[in-house]
Image (cartoon, rainbow over all chains, first blue to last red; front, side, top):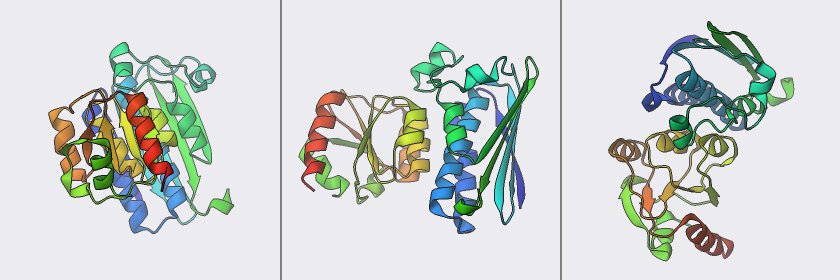
Length: 141
Length: 112
């Protein structure tokens, strides 16, 4: 099962909509509750990253019997130093975004903690691709 | 414990999301950092925060949080109220600050 969603940069009102629709699908598919909770956290953070930092993005969700693969591809400023971006507390979010409680520098680490594998590739001034894989049966990791 | 019991005990004002008032409370979480709530809050908790914008409802809904308490007499924005009513997540308001309301909530839940 495959589907695709678009994200508009800066559109905070819709942040979380994709995570919400994926959550409903995972429930219909009877995916283990603990597994779906992790996927929802990771996907929400991915959506917020695109809204807060990029100009636009696409989320591809691919569900098979074994795993759920989420690929978030954005057009945006990219990440200059991925290792630094992964550090908890490091953020390049604007003061306005931080005032709303976003931009605490926890998003990427939440995504890593809540997926079985995470791959980031980025080209500065072009964009970022984040690939998240989560296995449906927790013991298949 | 039900939200209605907590509203009475803590003298909270009901702002929106009335249809969710029969939700059960299984603890509390205090944070104004959304990623912290996303990563660490758990289902059925009541969330105390000073954030009032609509993203708090998106988070509460994704995390299956039972209700939100806004502190220091804060009121939510209009789109927060609308979303709270759609998602049936009560938004409650207290005149107390975070420390005081969290302390009282902790005492009540501890007795359970």
